[in-house]
Length: 252
Image (tube, rainbow, N blue to C red):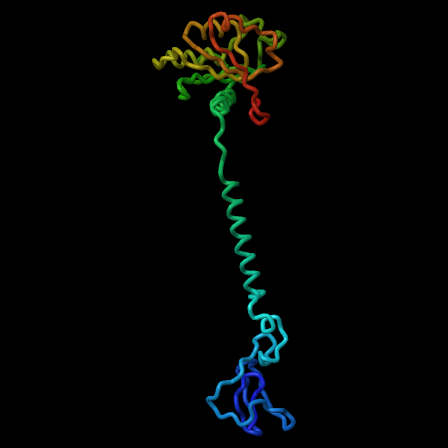
């Protein structure tokens, strides 16, 4: 009788078999020393190490030498590392998708800048939004009166040679602030105590209108073009005036 060194199965002297542990053909040799010679079938076999495929009593691998220490299998360790990476990627994706709430001034000024894109003026495009309690009441942009030809259609600007803030008697356009006031009056919307967001400093004529309709606060984007324009009309009547320095991507 002989015994397979890998799976411990008892064999005949010349018997061949496929080893259960390694899956290959095992052929016993006459010179093989058989451990447990004389053991009968059904008796307890010595446990084989899955790492070295040798009896655990004589195995020198770390698992058998230090059984109290648990060594993770390489495949399991890779899978665990991949799961951790997927969790980190998922968190990063959530942070990327999470959008920061923009400030109220930027939110409302965006509407004014959008309104300015409808302007038909050659020299400067402006937009205005009148709001109350953060609710939009009226909008406007500078352009020709209703029914009149726009400067962009005629290709002619009557104030080409005029400096900023002058020669308004030659201009055919209605300012953005004026159009916003007219729109509110046309549809019966009260703007008393409201706030005006505009893409440029209001002119003197617009300042007078804003005082008369009850605007209590004006927020504008400062530009070099209107540095010399005074805001005394608004300030002397107690209207709060504040500059809004828009980010580069919001510059009109």
